Image (cartoon, rainbow, N blue to C red; front, side, top):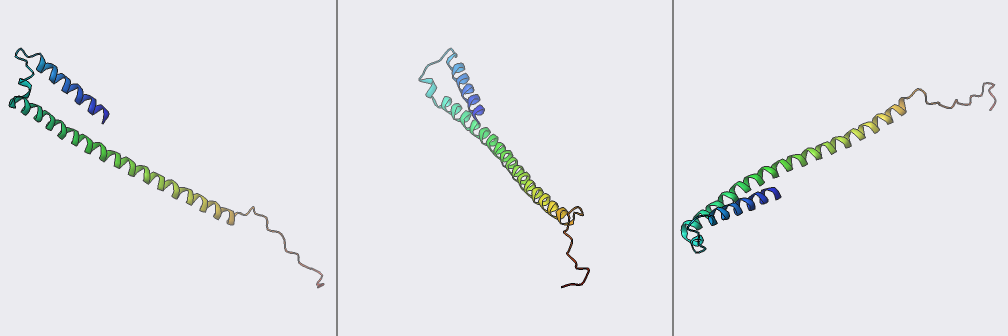
Length: 109
């Protein structure tokens, strides 16, 4: 948006420069109805274009934010699944040593 504002200021300055370079330039003619209509039309067109650019940029920013949130949610789900898989692997791992039960083979109690 800052670039759009800068371009608008440059174009406005160029318009005043071209108006100043006219052979019949006078400050009073700047405020005549035909000049004011041109100025207001330029401002109106600029606001319309600026509004469209703002709408498009806001829409793309919202989509990018939504994608970022989805990715974050997928990462959380992946971590949860990895923890769950590790827990299941730990339960079913045959390398886990189970201590032998002390059986009395002689039958003494």
